[in-house]
Length: 375
View (cartoon, rainbow, N blue to C red):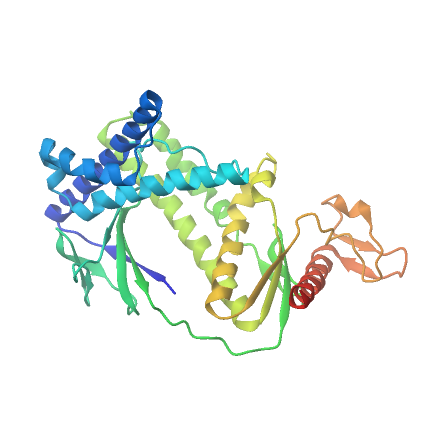
């Protein structure tokens, strides 16, 4: 099993210059061969694949001398990323999935930059306060965790705020299995409470974006008054990026704590397969849904359950979890989001909309699991 560790980098001036050169060279190679592949196909109808690009890169480096300065493995990795982008596009077409578009050129103005390099013959090594990287040598680094497993590759990135980070991917990591609790839980995601469990616990929605909205609006207002391209514009852009970075960090921290607690305390986790992309088209709720990060919650629950040997299931998005009573009666009026409590006309049971939905999701998950075990 693979695991990634992310650390903050503090490169020297010379190292920072080389990192930025590598960002530019990787972007150039990616765009050059994307254009070459498109041109070859349109002119001759022939595919110019990864092997041809890799062989042609040797020729290109002889013609363009500044391509020899950065790490050669990083340039090769950009070709692999281009091939992956092509593969994802054609696989999505076969599935009929419109989520993956055709590969596009990387912009020089993009404030998120990165490059990947592989650990070959010990070229990457993590020490107490430094990390050894190809061409860069020992780079000052805040190593906050002890690495486990063999280092496969590292990704050096720069955030819009200007900070540098390194992600270290390790293989053969043995995850500790959580103690069996014998519990199963259903989860209903929402906005007033970010998640409501079948045992009645509400995970609060901290609304990080709303809390920082005044500060963010103030900094964005100052940015709008700066001249684009000027030094003051660049300084203010970084201030806006830092506000966004803080919001994202707070949101990610709260979600990690919530999902880790759910995985730790339950052997089985069931949630609804929400169409978040479609729900984001609602102009009144899209901002709140984006701030809640339902997709990230699902992603974390899925991989953490796999890590610790838990069962993770999703019920169909059209399952009427909020409308069903335990007696089997379905109240179609509960489609209206304003109805938070309702009474069953058949058995007289009172229902909290979210708690009832989470309990129905759990029952449906147990039913699907039993069918899967029988088959």
